[in-house]
Image 1 (cartoon, rainbow, N blue to C red):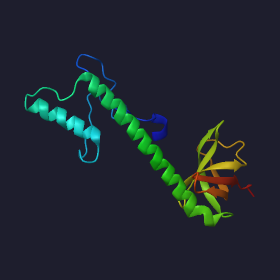
Image 2 (cartoon, rainbow, N blue to C red; image 1 turned 90 degrees about the vertical axis):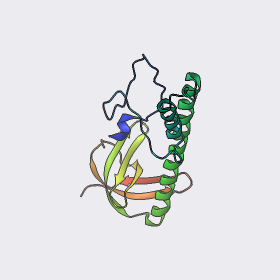
Image 3 (cartoon, rainbow, N blue to C red; image 1 turned 180 degrees about the vertical axis):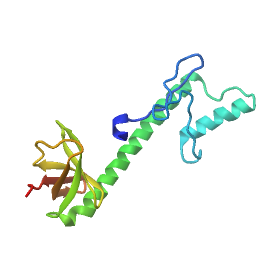
Image 4 (spheres, rainbow, N blue to C red; image 1 turned 90 degrees about the horizontal axis):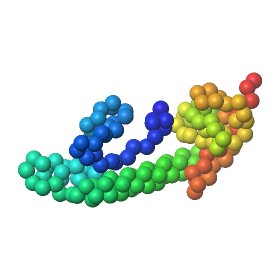
Length: 163
């Protein structure tokens, strides 16, 4: 479900302009904050709130805020990409000694780019490289691990024929 929502992004909301809000929470006025030592967007938000509470001038211009929003979105996307790659490579590493084993799985994606399954134990996603014809999202299937590539983060399965 989360994959269907797409990625989030930081945006500048100006007074008098209609804001999209937060789709998942169904609210228009939204900000999220954690500890400012962990996330730069939180530091920016807290600086703005502090200035407003103290009656001071806004610490950023509109142009700076727009650029900061774009920058933070780009950096967060880049970090997420690295995180996904590390997780995929770790899964390939953990499974490389289990080639030939069979697993119960659920189809999590089916498109022209390929068919993907998530095995239950250990929870890992991989591509069905043989026997993917006719599979659709949500189908339960038995698969055999046929290959892994740690460097590229690939985990490849083949569909096991039903008996």
